Image (cartoon, rainbow, N blue to C red; front, top):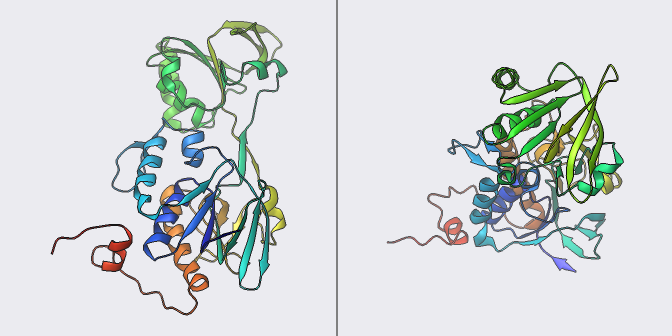
Length: 340
């Protein structure tokens, strides 16, 4: 059994910053995530995509943000249990017993659910033959955009991800953008940009088309797309990208006795505690009036949740608010050395 103050479920940006906030008030934590890497959706879905709404950082990628957060929590020497899923949560006296699918058992005073919107996987093409090319020529997320340079890339989708990548890859690749409707769901500015690129022959646009078949032996050679009127068009392509959103699964969370609002967990905004005392929820998975699904908002939620955990981990102590700029105890936890 692993004993610690808090178990964080989810190693995305919000979970990582929560480690920091727990650490500076003197609480220890362990982290479980069902992905095989730290960073959550930032790493899994858009490691190369620029992010513009992190305070004091005009622009960074998902990978850069993750790396900076990992650097920030180094003083706390946190253990990560990756590629692992929490299966069972039960209360025993004043502690929570948490078991994972790999047989690990945690003994904690609080749990913080920072798992985005649960475990997720991309919606995939319905054409069965696509499976043999997945991970080689057919992708549902981009981890290294350099592989598409000077290649033909066929992008399916009508939302922000499809539009953003069509725009970005058009600078170095031949891009086909295929959507099953005439209208796009993405930002209007992106839609206008796509139309302009289409007029300049930098993006070839196919609307009211869907994937019909894929062709190739060891490697993908071409695809055929079918129009609403039944006509078929064949396209030679090196890569295919599908951006159809994510399938969200709450999984075992459904059995933890938590109140649920659709696929979200209601919380109070004083400490982001759920209806179960000692279980907190932060990030995209929690819901409250005025909720904004921003990384920035998740950071705020994590800071308050961390302080909400203190009363369960140290019931005999009173937590004093301390500024990181002046508190010697906080600076000591961060490993900061001050010259007298």
